[in-house]
Amino acid sequence: MRIVPTAAVFAVTLAVSLVDGAPALAATESKRSAFTSGDKQVSVKCGPGRVVIGSGGFVSGDGHVALTAVGPLLDDTRSAAVAEEVGAGTSATWAVTSTAVCEKAPAGYEIVAQVSPAGSLNQRRQRVYCPPSKRVLGVSGGIIGGDGEVGLDGLDIMNDLSHVTVSASEDQNGYAGSWRLVARAVCADPLPGQHLVSSGGTQTGSASRATRTATCPPGERMFGTGGEIADGAHQVWLEASYAENGEATVTAFEDADGFGGPWRLAAYAVCADG
Image 1: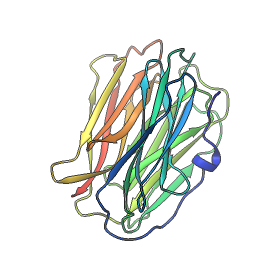
Image 2: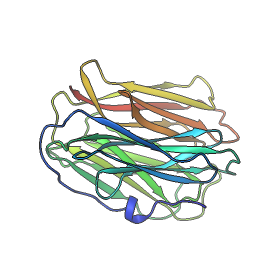
Image 3: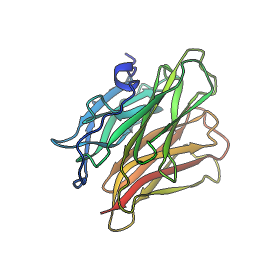
Image 4: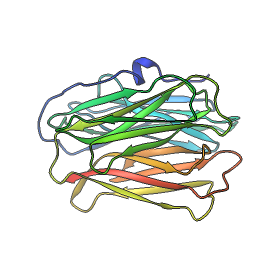
């Protein structure tokens, strides 16, 4: 059975201000689904007194399975990951893990979201800005619709931490149905030393799968993470974007018939003084 993110979960514009105060040390929570075939959604909850700062997810197992949504649920203490089999699907079993970087809500904490118009389009890029006095702590988003023929290819955080851009593409054969894209930015008042770390490069040739990581400098703390594919030509999808053990990891894979050209992959981490 295909699992599609509901509008109540992934399409509501959130702007919820929570308790001010300096953030406590972050905790990374995770929860994995069962290993089966078929599309999946799983969610993870932050501990008491903490809210979602960064959302992520990753797929484990064989087959061509793409992330189609990651992000906090309506109460801001729980984050979900959705993954779908792409193309002809797979008979292999696989699992999806949802991750969340959880903190005490920093001063000015809010989640701002934008939803694209519905329709069929080769690629969509949805941008969402933090209020002018605030900076991005995390990015999330997802596809509504798509039926396994639309995949995420970007959870992008801008260098100046003013906004995020979420992007998704139809596969190389296109998709005649209607779909939408949700982008969310976790925003807060600027933290001391807050900045973006990025790590990426260009593949010298086609690679069936690639991984990039980004790490905050010594003495700094990691908040939200993201990643972005460039030059994938509707044949490269995100399989993982998450934080673990102080490292931001992003993985992407080529579709079943491969892609002959070079493509790039970047990982992003929002860091601030420890």
